Image (cartoon, rainbow, N blue to C red):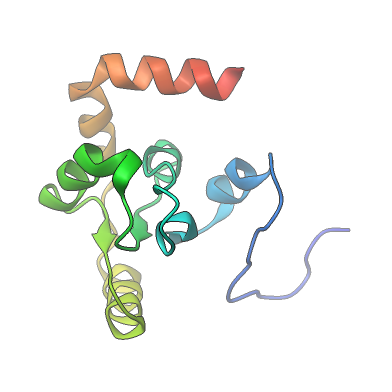
Length: 120
């Protein structure tokens, strides 16, 4: 049934539905970057126009995480204080959809690969 109340946080621990939540969330935390498993996609929340906040374990997404941080499209955090600071900042200073669009446009080949994978 549809949600009828305001929800502050939703934790997803199920395969295959994360993109739906990225499409409706205000701020996305990429939890697969909290533990040493290589990191999860930072492009998926950006694809839906959401700014990713992520942890320190980025082996599988090292290059893209640097680009995202340099362009201030997302925020790497190492503890709960940095996490809360990032959320508080984004609530009043959201990243513009146009800035995210330009990022994808400048990395068109990478986007085509991601979209293909997402469609599969």
